[in-house]
Length: 250
Length: 248
Image (cartoon, rainbow over all chains, first blue to last red; front, side, top):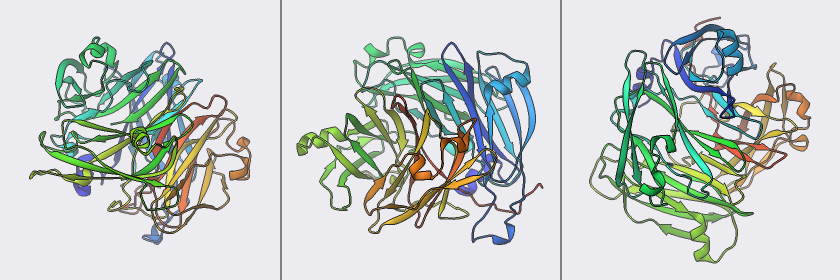
């Protein structure tokens, strides 16, 4: 599986990473992407240890339609942490919020090392974080993408959002979202388009305005039937009581 | 899979057994067993089996239900989840994911965290003792909390090294995770023997967790002023470099 994963990712040349980033004052959510360069150490390959080694990577910022807004080359010195505020990237690109889209990172090395990117999505109330997710459809095969939560099942004053990035630079997709009960009963579906390198950020309410009736206050999940699409997917919970976002990847 | 069972002070734990994106057959059938282990012992206080479920379903296990059956008001310890296929199909049981939801009744704690394999996990790592996480936070307002889960019969020592953006570091005092238990310390003056100014002005850095034997580690982010905790995720192993570095 590992060699298959590495082939599909193109590891062996450069390591690609994809994150969904956002700067949206109206929705009260911002983001930053963080990388940490811990030089390769350890007993396995001690001769490769080079604590003076720089970590270089390229970044491309795409808008939600897949248009490149910014290209840049960055360097991280050993033991340093790079913090890429989306607001700063937007300023450099000349674009303005509200914004959401793809941040593509390409490491100039054969493997991740310690440079797996994590993303903070935050506002004044909370920070939520998880890592990038550059998975190709070649890795997933015909498996489904599943968002486990269609509803917030303990508290009702939450709303679930889904953020997707199409990491395919050439193909657009008509994504089919299916709402199903926990028992696996398919209730309804809806289609949304996503452009090459584009992104989609939508709430369950926008996808299924009648989700509460459809699930009869029960729990449920959403899955995507596009098993051929290369997607990065996160889901978010906005807690209306604390006005805090919670994120996790799929 | 192993994880922290957190059923106290209004916080509840819900296990979400996700299968449909990991099995090729929609009719693959599974059954799961959940053990609740009180702190410090491998002897379960409760063992429960789920009904049989298919890969199209989402199996949710509320630990509160188990506590109600045991007539316990609170519980802190570990849970172990074992999942196995019950039919003749191509499903592979160890590929099932268990997502843990921690949710408090007042809404201040709401997060989802992957459970970790405590047996059979295989990841190539440069150093099996180290795991890292970019984006640790420590300021007057926010602080990261590190969860270490020990599902072994011996105590395991650990320490946390915190790096600021410039690459300077401070190291925590030595921590001990008792056998069949967990610790969940927050970055503070007592633990790190430093002050939040170490990460100023951004309040953001990275941490490296060293453990004498490899155990799962996770990092949460807490708002110190309001108690809101909305972030929980696993650390990363330092993946080995297959070749000498390309560029320098």
